[in-house]
Length: 628
Image (tube, rainbow, N blue to C red):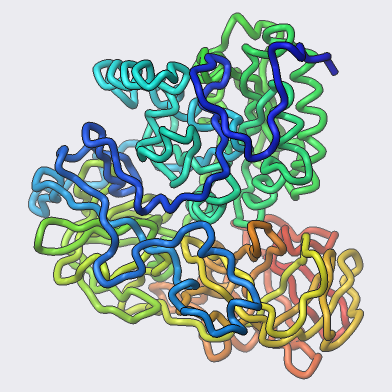
């Protein structure tokens, strides 16, 4: 490893603020001051709304306000739900799910339901790519430069961003400000909320999701990751930023693990800031970073031969859209997978080589709400990703968990009102007769006539304890992050402890759980929550457990008492689901044994038991089998 220039590169302690206009920072400011982003103001000249998963510019009179009659947002400290807070009977508002930020919308943003675009006019499918990485690694700069290089923003607007960054004394932030719109984000030099922009590649329309890297806003990162099909992990090659990111307290390893736990199986590792290595564009430094990150992503669960590695410079634009001569020593990236190999030279080539997830259009509709906007005086716009099924104007829908009935007036995909939208697409639903206080982030939209979403009061889960200081006992109440929802859950019952490697039963009804334990538990949400069985709706059955700013476990929901599996349009069992009579049901230390065929749309089961990989369940013989 090269020796850094100690006079020009000073190691930063975690949480140390960085201000000024260092051209090598690439938008990597760090500040530990806690802030509630819901109270932050937008730049009046650059107000944006996220509609249908895509940033659009609204009139200058747009404002951000607290939800009328709601909790007015949830600061990072509000996420720290602990046993003591529950035991002391503190205000339940502390534990409410994070509400979406409502924004007033001008008349020009209204959907015209009469001007509908047919699906045949949309030539390419959509995929969603989330950008992850340690704070200060240059995620927003990479995302912004990629959007700019793909003509996702015009020159006039880019000139305005450059002028504003120069006036603020931060010229190196001009590309990051394409994604970072909140005034608090620009002042602190960090991302706080998730932002989405659409770019077009040769094969896809790509929704680029810029997720925050600061540990205070990890709940927003999980929300963005739950909507993604592909993860782009940005790793800084600059010393000591790489060393900070892969340390035990860094976010690089945690973000890789969170992406896999939320079901993202395609990974692109971008080694950024190659223009500021010592020497510039150092091949030796790149190989050192790749060698160590490869071990890290393998431990997270990814298959190394399917992971793409490539060196880039977000600030200079090297290897983002086309091959750069500055990195002439890098010939190409190459991967091997079951469906065939792929190779390329740039990040855009890597996005083109990604595979779309299996289509689940025949399933009942499920949309996880991530944003809610006010639409004039007549209604609201609910934005979210379609996890399965399809939606079209005129459909009667139910919003869970409060069981609100409504009707879809129009469906918007990107800037167009469309006849219908399918799984994997970020859409906006225009709904009349509701107010922004009626719908919140974390709600789930479903069709009223086909398995509408329901509130879950108790469910059985199989979890893996990754990192927790001390013992976990019955009654422990951490925060559970599932799709876009974030609520506290109580460990109602500790059913079984299992061996991580062999899957053999170690103890029935343990009194304590520790780091490294695989276990079957009953969880009871403290606040209303919609969660589905992993066997029925895989993307809505995964969750992450966090407490005091740390990820302590991951898992899947394997059974919800009294819940029946979904059915397809032709009354056959949906592909990949488990009929109700054959579901795992753990009672009294025993489980029902069953076997199901391997669906083609899912990976084959792993021989090594890992709750991070797939759902697992116990058979009568006492061994853990992995299905789906």
